[in-house]
Image 1 (cartoon, rainbow, N blue to C red):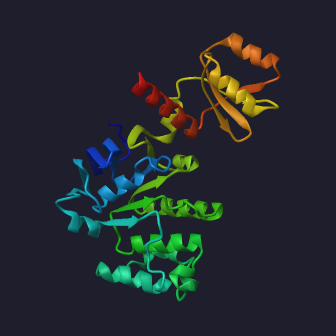
Image 2 (image 1 turned 180 degrees about the vertical axis):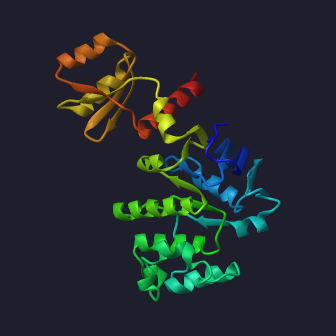
Image 3 (image 1 turned 120 degrees about the vertical axis):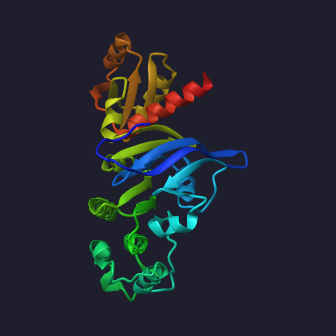
Length: 310
């Protein structure tokens, strides 16, 4: 298992976790460690298993097999103690819509035998954005403000580790940027953070990431190393008919992969110089580009699919 030498202590340990929903294999032999003080990202589309994994690690559901510990506590045997040490922000807004902002925060503080005043320093940078609206009902808040309130409630008891399940989904770009700035400050406070997201551009903001697809981990590394490990040359192509070109490329044996990325195509060739020269003669504009996290994810996903079929 990959480790990061900048982090000395493991705070999350998963070993061969499996979870099925009927015939659907939600998690398949998931094993990884998260180090204390790390900002660790689970990156993948809907249905990749991120939420199921979070629910197991926060003791909300049981795995079918495998083991997991969080902050040294078994997620099954020690679930009561575990819940005192973690903060969990689920993907859907789960606070009390009929209570005000302040009432929600007071409620969660009381559950953990603390108060807003005692840990105000921990949530100050987040809460001050919504404190002017502390008497507004939570259900009447905007998406970005709901997000800040949910994070404040997850932090008010000073947890050792935060689990944030797709916290920026459906939030405007400005609020997304603000949220990640908040996470960086919390990490600087020594809080370990595990965050899931379907947004590939957020992956580079994590110390390490696990790329997930169909309940499996395709790779775990730093964002930089995942990009560095891209094994082929990647080309950006453009023509006056990208959709038609894409169809031709996917049928050509000289092409390993071809995908639409906005107004361009991203293509990996099988080192066939003659084929590339032929495309150039057909007025296809192309240039070599560095891969993004999304390019790496697609490549790993295709390789994994080919290995299963082979």
